[in-house]
Amino acid sequence: MKNFDIGIIGGGILGTTISYWISNLYDSSVCVIDKESDVAKHTSGRNTGVVHTPFYLDPEKKKIFAKSAYLSRNLWKTLAIQTQSPWMEIGTIEVAIDELQHKTLEKYQKWGIENGVNEDSLLILDSNGLKQKEKNLECYSGLLCKDDVSTDYSKLTQEIKNISRQNSTEFIFQKTVKSFQQKNDSVQINFTDNSSIECKYIINCSGGNSLDIAKQFDLFESYSDLHFRGEYWIADSNYADIVKTNIYSVARHPEFPFLDPHWIKRANGTTEIGPNAVPVPTPETYDGFVTDIQTTISKLGDILTGGAKKLFLNPDFLSLITHEFRSSISKDAMVQRVMNFIPSLEPNYFTKKGTAGIRTPVISPEGNFIPDVLEREGQNSFHIVNYNSPGATGAPAYSALVVKKLQDKGFLKNPKSQKNSLWDFNSIIEQI
Image 1 (cartoon, rainbow, N blue to C red):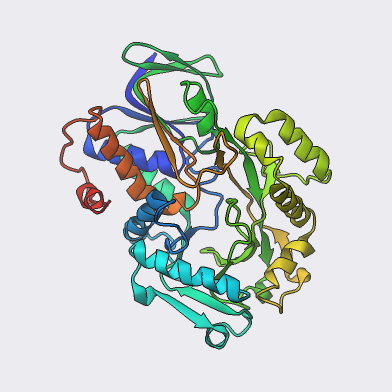
Image 2: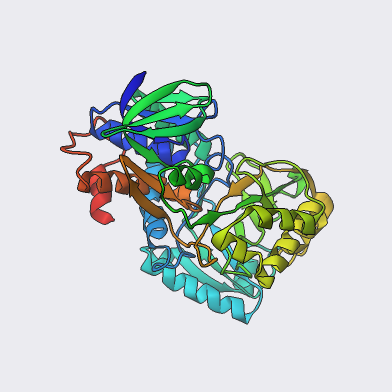
């Protein structure tokens, strides 16, 4: 049986960056475990590729996400330049269709400044000002964020993996965790192929599966989660530049962690609209139409317990989910929602589906969506749950914070000088 000092469960963008920091600062033996054939095969590689500026994040309720996103932008830029990865400073406009939504934009502008964003990078424009920038955009007002970037998180994660591997991290792929066996000073990880490894310490950052793994350590037992698939449609190249900026719209239901459909300029040159938020049974259900809405909702409700089940008694939640199902079944329904601010669009402009991604929000015992990341320490383990959007944006800084917390707890001791100068650990920690 192979032994490691630290086993990181999850080869997404978070697990890979945590492995980078530990292997960069310590001589500990580190492994990253993932059931797929490579890193970033799920949420980390199935997203819009936007490096988000945290103007829309409540600095109180989403403090960790906001701070991590703000600090990580320049870290990603440094890596992108060094590795010749995509980095398109394209900007984003958050649009309001009426006075009420305009008030939300004013709130976002204040939040952004409180989160550290430069005032000159966040400008509120009226309808005429927006027309001057994007002639096909029609709305009441908009908040222009100049700092948003389009990149390729899958490639960036690959580059971090390469550096971490050079620092002696071992990446163990195509291994599915079956169970854990607690020992006095270690944890044995058993895989479905009947093989095992032993680690002195486990870091659980396995995305949509992280809550299930944490429960195997008797943590978060009264919490639930749900998986929501977000679908996209790709614009035909003849219409891809009708609008040249990312366009987001103010969420109609801010109490739920769903995004209203938006217009995205990807780093690969394509333009997409989406997403919706369709409930699915697993964090890897990327395909398949759900046509029987009521039966599906009932089935999901039957398998849920605690707080998640309470959500299915909420008429506003049920109404919203039903609406999201319709946009999954009908491309026209998705396009119609984007036409609220780009009215010149037509359904036939969108010829094929884009890459679907899945978000897995965690629900409290009271039936509310948890707004920020959750962390718990278990026996010989540390668990990161509910690490959702903009998690990819904030991964470099947040992963450094995780390492600092393990230092403060006494598990990681006496770091050495960094092995390379890509990102400076102490500088990040000082700003957090």
